[in-house]
Image (cartoon, rainbow, N blue to C red; front, top):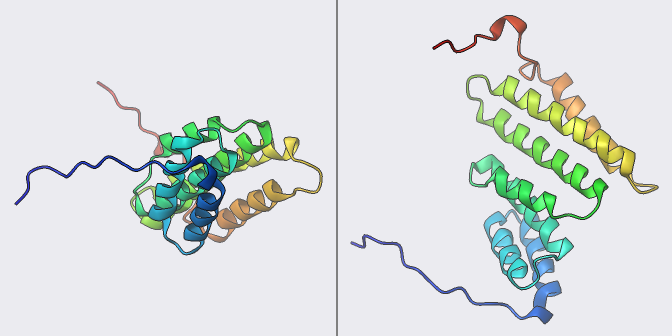
Length: 171
């Protein structure tokens, strides 16, 4: 029986293989191989830390892992902050909040409906910011905003906290 996890020195990919690696990561995401997509993105970002496609694919791969409870929202938000434009930062911030809300809601824990509601409302605020910066012909933030609104309207469990539910902690 081993007491320690084995440590490996990771192999570094070649800079000229980055585009092919990103295509593989995108395919793995579509095949629900979230960990493989995340791993490939980490390899790409090791050799090309500012690669926009790799950053976005990594954000999406991490967001895919929220439902399993195996991804860091902090790391995902740090990656969003590395995006250059106001539109992309707002859009992907909204996407993270939306995916987190869905993961929270599906856990079905006590209070998850209220927490998920607040996360969806935050996503909607981000999508509204993205809407004001979107390129012509890009209605993605509107589509995402509508998805959040429909989720709230279709699920009574998604609701704002009741005013009388607040009980401050007294020392």
